[in-house]
Image 1: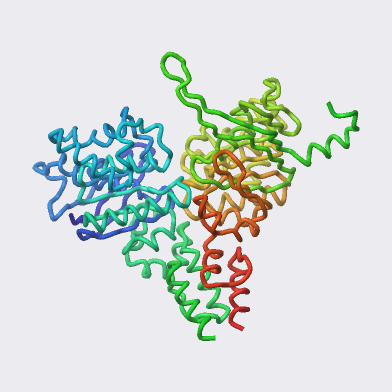
Image 2 (image 1 turned 60 degrees about the vertical axis):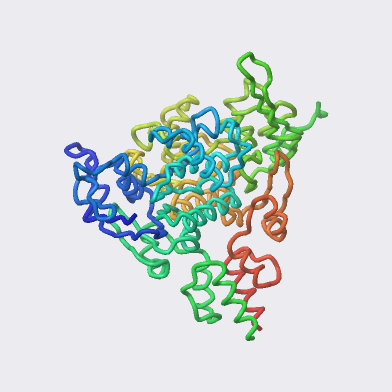
Length: 283
Length: 294
């Protein structure tokens, strides 16, 4: 599904002394199947933005379209919208509640009124794609480890078969291996299901490595929107916004300042390994 | 009982191990509806360690390795099933000492929003000392001093709710500083913060350690944050599996990865392109690369 935001605005607490413009004139278009990262300091409007994506919040100005259809239209089917756009919130494992892993994952499909057998198939499939073994189906989700709980929570969203998957810091609080596993899993799901994925992250390394396009939120406005290179080239501006560039990029800049390399537009470990080893071989 | 030793010697003894774990085992016991034991999880397993006054210790370990259980023993939020925890010589098992221990060892948690309670920043910071019964005049001074040390003095009358995540964590730190602690435990304080917030908190922790001599125990999943520590301890299944200076620990990359950890970015890169020695910082990387090119 393609997503279009056209001059979207959101005003919190209208008419009160706490009135705050949380989204200002936000416009963008995300094509079907894109992998987009959203970065921004705390309070920059990232969470408000993603809550507009499945209609949890209604914009107070502007329009939002999915596949060209305005979601604020009276005829627009909001139930289908919530089914099509799955949002995995921060620490989604806090929302687990059922007695068993299987029931928790099947909760969404059951609520949609999907026949039981089909819901069961979806549950199996969703758990498989997050790498949770069938043997855990009847286990209480609260007996699982932190990383496993998070996978089960994500499976609950996947069981709705969303066409757009939005994840708010899916790796927060996980240990390094758990972090990598979960991000690889998301990239793999996107490849296999060919869905649009939007990843909110505070890790510049993670967005550099995984996404194709970065949107930068700052004080409720979309401050930058471009490829990884286009965004991370604007280091000074990012730093002013409380953000940063990947550590690898900072290191390459240091090496360039010393006249040791020529390239600075390097954002991932693999690129840096390639360039620095080549230079060592040529010595 | 120790033989009779003088006060000065007692103090030296105490400082050598401000935090002392002696064969600590902690079990989470789950019971079913009838109260029968359902399962027992051993979160700390015969763990012994000493942390000196003024030390900066980073604790690493995968999810479920026992890091947070360990942290909660330091300020008596949890008490050992077996063994002893002594903080500045006080036994956490001694109920009369609990308040005293919490004043010595304060804790900063992961979620800044869960730690803010008052309407203004200064009231929030005053909450701890107020509960300790600190006289008003001294309290004013303690609060002001704490806020100055974290750089929030000018904002003292503002509402904490409008602050950034990093600033909220600083308010939590100031609240602990106002209790005049000897030790601050940070339990993944940067997990929910943006890059500038992360930097803010790590720099604050380092400053409190270097300038004020406060013992810092930092639990984190971010390897970069541990590079400046005096010592790194890696936990796994409630036991210490690696221990040493950052250079000692990070030179054993394979072992760390087995434990679900990784190396700091520059260390990893240096190893992958075959630079010799264990590189920990960007400066060290530049020097090592220069040498390799020669």
